[in-house]
Image (tube, rainbow, N blue to C red; front, top):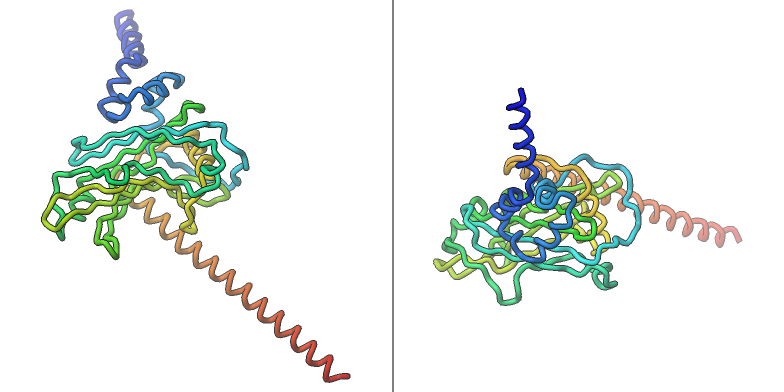
Amino acid sequence: MCYFLKTSLELLSLCTEDQLWREICNSTWPSTTYPSVRAAISAFPSGHRSFYSDSFPAAGGHQSKKAHQVRVPDTSELISAVDIYFDDKLIYSKVLVTETLSGWFLSSPFRIDLLGQKETVPTPMKFDGECMELAEERLRVSWILINPSKKRAVKVTSQKAVEARRHWLTEDIQLRYATVVDGGGGEQVQCGVVVTCGGKEGGELQVGEVSMQVEDMEGKILTGLDSLVTLEEAMEGQRCKSDTKTDREIYEMFLTKKIHFRERKQSRERSLDMVCVATGVSIFLAIWVFFLSR
């Protein structure tokens, strides 16, 4: 009995060892080796163990019917830890720090761009007519947002792309990695990372753009303030296990809800238009009758 108790205590001690969890985090997300990320994780309640608990499961959970409270988040920055893989082999890793206190950031549409203007990421694939399906299956992106002030983190990308399409003008491939989270008031929002790939026909497929935004049911990009509120609640909210099939099903359900939301909105607008027309006609007839009766 004492032997088993001793073994259990040793296992418990091992499971709470930060060095072990740091190695797990570093091997899972190489971007966590960057100094700014390591400094932020060191302030988490249980260090790398807390970070892993926040970041490994997907963001998600039940819908809340409560509206978001209007408040200015007290965080001064968001840290993005991003890793891009091809067939589970790391091809790019980067950490970005985004300032969040300026009036411009809070009032402008929220968007974080990973790559510089002329920066590209090469892949082992050729750019041809069949590369979209292959890229959708073999290219993977992990984007983790860290709030140093709250000592919380959340992964905003799906396991694999939930959508792949060709740009109507440039023929570039656009891959979307998204999670759907509670937006307050019974509505949902989409945290989406869009990866744009292109190249010359028969040449190397290159990643030319990677951006992250938060989009509501109307397809509108949330402002920096609204995005911060949503992301903070996602960090503090539930987590759920996910896989490629589940991620795509959730995303397709979100698209279906968007269609229904748009149809309801158009129906309300048509009803309002009819009321306005009826009111206008009634006023015109009343004036016309008034002049005839004189």
